[in-house]
Image 1 (cartoon, rainbow, N blue to C red):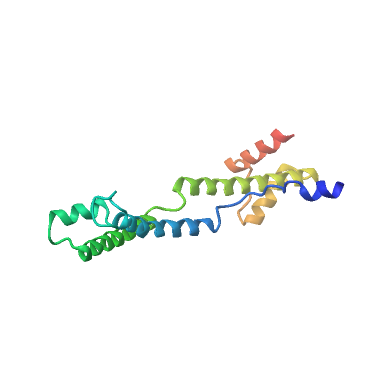
Image 2 (tube, one colour):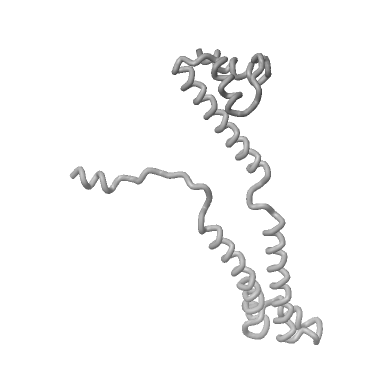
Length: 166
């Protein structure tokens, strides 16, 4: 009985960074919808108003001018269809997939993660019994900067953070 409950329970949810291959599927459907909609415009029945297989738009075009025969109407539809393809592609290139604000937030997140790792390393060193001054001196030596009297803003901030934890 326990095996049934074990194998039939809901799996643990995992986060995803995006929608994966669905982006390509949605783009394909968007491109497929353009010629499909134009075919619907041309071939939809006008409710019995004209020849079988002609839409009201085609009937209107043919009634206003002798130039609009079936061949010219199809050329018009293909031309407008290609124009819409071009507009869609230009817009896809011009509009970024990820807004600049989101990119900035991701950069901030990376910086915060780096600061948190530095803070954790400082905590580990303090747990070993290392003094604040020793930590600052070793960090300066590792970074290749000369040691000073500990009065820089970075040193004061590091010391203040460590004192808050004590």
